[in-house]
Length: 58
Image (cartoon, rainbow, N blue to C red; front, side, top):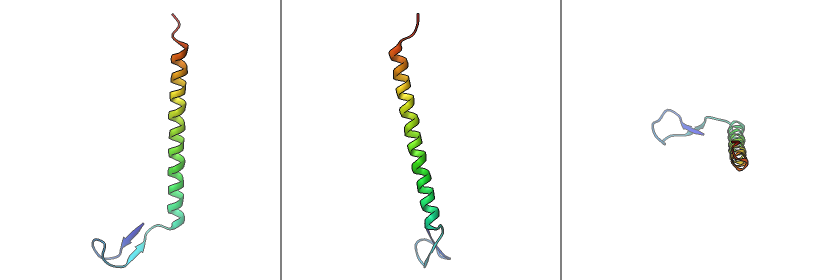
């Protein structure tokens, strides 16, 4: 992430705001969260299908 120092808009010399390691850590964290969400949705869909296949006891 880059921020312009002391000027408005995109003019002036850019200063780095966050380090590369921090940016990579945030990206990795978001990737893990997205994979976890996909896994939860997949398990929910599969368990719902299994429950519907068993039918309701009468």
